[in-house]
Image (cartoon, rainbow, N blue to C red; front, side, top):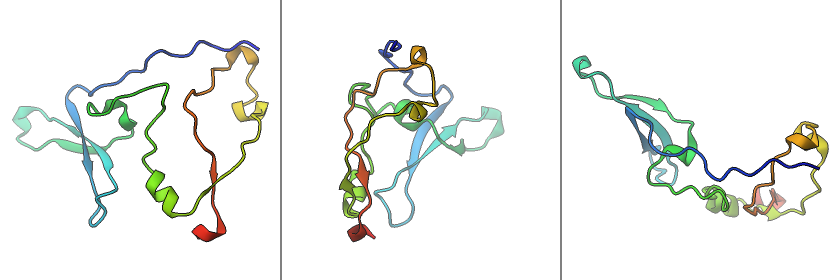
Length: 123
């Protein structure tokens, strides 16, 4: 089996001409919805235009990206309250990777994550 080389870095940082901001629904300061504020031309005399931001933490200058650790488990407290339980992982099968050839496989993510399943107690 041939495995492609792991990336050493990913593109991060702010997007020129805009900034990442977060908004929380009323009464839910624990939920941060990401938006991007895009500066309009000064002659528009309008505030920045706000759009939903799907870039994840990669464009947030306050977040440090560590490829070895993986992304921060932001939903852990919510998942714990819901009563999820650890689940034994099954071996990876070819169809999990789209039946791709061995020459196209990428290394597994080095960040270890516990696989969780819902439980009757969490319903």
